[in-house]
Length: 123
Image (cartoon, rainbow, N blue to C red):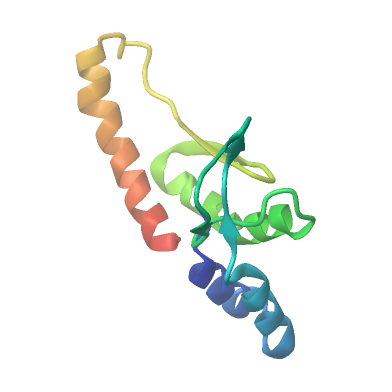
């Protein structure tokens, strides 16, 4: 999920956005609400604190800018990955000898956790 404050900070520090354009994007992301409608049922309005506006022209661009630095983390963890307009995929490959669930659990999960720590710090 895209944290609005982190996105705005990234746009300022990595993309050099300042002044009115940055304030415009802050306004665009703030004070948004959503509800879910299914048939005759609907939820209450709830504030949207994370994510980019769905169905917007700016949404995919803001997500790409938010995730642009993630590929630099892949080589540090013997991972490969792909960035998409609305998703990130990372792959960590192991030996074919890791057939047992126990070995995969003991060896792969710590690698994923280690990879996730810099990712959380990055975001």
